[in-house]
Structures are given as structure tokens and as C-alpha cells.
Image 1 (cartoon, rainbow, N blue to C red):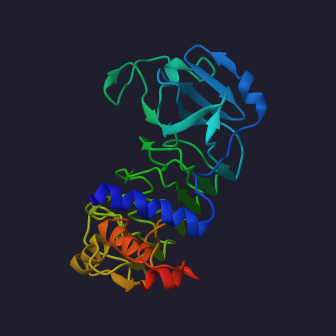
Image 2 (image 1 turned 135 degrees about the vertical axis):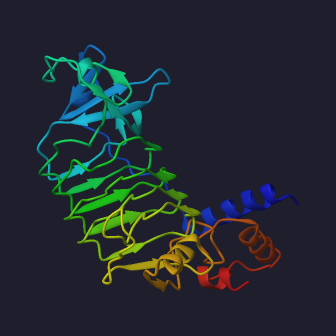
Length: 289
């Protein structure tokens, strides 16, 4: 039996024991957004400035509302929100235009910035839905940000994503993220701990735990929670960062071996248990097979 077929069998068995298929967060905006007012290349609804892409997906470009807890919707106009992208004020007739050309980004005379890179005070919590797969913006403009939750659809947390946010104290990273970019969470003095799933395979320079991206000084009161034989543990040991090994890390449905991964080892356990005549009474019994 191929690994692909075994994995498929594993997923089928996991659905039997869970009774349901886990899906991404469903956080659509109100029906009013189905009739969002179109403004040239951007649309606006409930504070969100966004664009509908050629493939029928939605990219969040900016936010001008006053929410303290900002829940990025999973869909707008019935279309999935899949990206937090760059914002071009010159394409937004509601934005204040500059009277003189500037050079910013790669375009002369046009301002280019990430959706949350500038002037977003007052936002204390950001929750990203599982539908978002592309994060092309950082959140350094959210000076009051205290908590951020990344959805399971994101595989990479980009360079300087939350660097320098002095009030940030809680970061939730779900299983599925494979890379954390350089200085993603550097100089975040209120961030005392970070739990990383085993899916993280690559961690950039001074990604977290450092007082700033220019020195080798780390926070003595910061602790990284990780798994054995993980990139996170190797990062902590290399940089002299406090760490704690978690007994039961985050895991996907069907992660029978409790190692934070869904692979052929889980499939083999599933096949072994399937050969038994009686159904398991609990997930622990399944894992012990």
C-alpha cells in the first residue's frame, strides 16, 4: 500500500473517531457586503478596503474602522478571503493623495505599503481566518496590538511581521506554518512565551526572543515551547533562548503518534488498528495500537 493511500485511510479513520470534519473558521461579513460599493479598483465594506482578484478570491488591502478586536472575515461577497496584501493609496479615491511624487516600494510616484503597516492604532486583537493563505503585509502599524492569531492556512509568517510591537503579549500559531521569517517577532518585550507547532521547519535570524534585530541580546524572561527534534528546539539552543519541551504538542486530526505531524507513521498505526476486529473505545486506545 502506498503512503498516499495509507494517509487517505488515516484521514478517513480520523473522521470516524472525531464525528466531524474540522474546517477553517467561518467568519463572513454581514450580507450588506454583498452590495459593497465599488470605488474604482478597490471596494469598501464595514471598514475593510479590499479587492476581488481575477480568480474570484478577495485580498484585504487596508482597514479604516475602529474595532479593538479585528476579526478578518473568511469571505466577502460570498468569495473567500485568501490574502492580506499591499495597499496602493493611489488606487483608492477615498485616500488622501500626496501632492508631490515619492519613492516608496518599487514604484516612483506611487505609495506602496502593507495593509497594516502604517497608522492602525486602537487595534488590540487580530484574528486571521483559516482561509488566508498569503500574508504579504506586516502588522507594525498596529502599535496597540496585544494579541494575534494566525489561521491554519498560512504557511509562512513574513519578515518583520510583528517586530517592535511593545504591547504584543500573545501570539497563536497553528499547525501548518512551516517558516517564520527574519525578525518576525523581535523587540516584543511583552511577549513572554511562544508555542510553536512541529510543522515549523525553518526559522529566520532573530525571529523571536531577541531585544532587537541588530544585536545578539535575548530576553531572559522569554520561553519557547516546542517539541523534541524540532527546528524550534534547535533555534533555541543555538541562540541561548529558554525553552520547554511539550509532552502533547498541537496536532492535526489523525496525528496518532502525537508528534505534531501527519505522516506515514500515523498511517501505519491506522492500518495496524484496522486489522483488529473491534473498534477502539477511545482515541488513547487508538494511539496505543
